[in-house]
Image: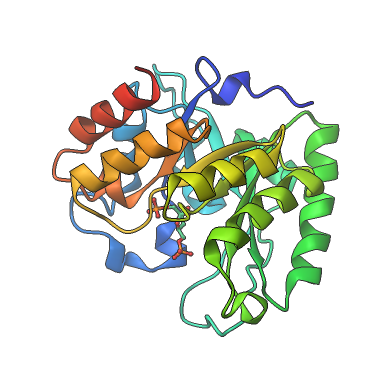
Length: 251
Ligand code: FBP
């Protein structure tokens, strides 16, 4: 099994996600967070066990940066815009494992839209990535997002566990899943993931109380932590909310 200690502290994780510029466009940003340097200032505050970037951002802002704080890079290897988001999404690979390692990645990530008719392409890309990354001892994180015509009309709560299990069976070391809405469903997803660890994504910005309650539920359900973006850097006080999340993950 690939060692995850570089990406975790006491076996737990808090990743700062910043690939939304590609996924959603700069409409997610404002003057406080459009500059990746401002995100790196948050990421190196000591609250995070990794930062998630696309390759261009990583090359121009992460590489050649002498951080005082240990900050592992998780490089997202695929991506898409939301402009061509048909019923069956597909997020093509845009960076290789070896390129990611050259840029300084400690881990690589890939989104599979579970339920999309493009599953075969995504499975193929993911499995090659998984093989190469593991040959090089690099952890693989699967963004297992339930989306597409195959998922239509089915229970997200049940399919979240399907996505988590798929991550285990495809060789992911960590799966990043969306919160299915209640602790029981998440617990089942965590159990289904087996030895593959689970982190939960933050989603759209919500009020602090709801966010913190969700983080607590995720930890109680057996997740090792969170991978949060907008709920941190869209907050008026990013370090303040990071501190509160940290206290729940590492009580
Ligand atoms: P957030 O915490 O901002 O939701 O980030 C998590 C994340 O997985 C990002 O890595 C990604 O850009 C985004 O969510 C994709 O969300 P969606 O596909 O639902 O728009």
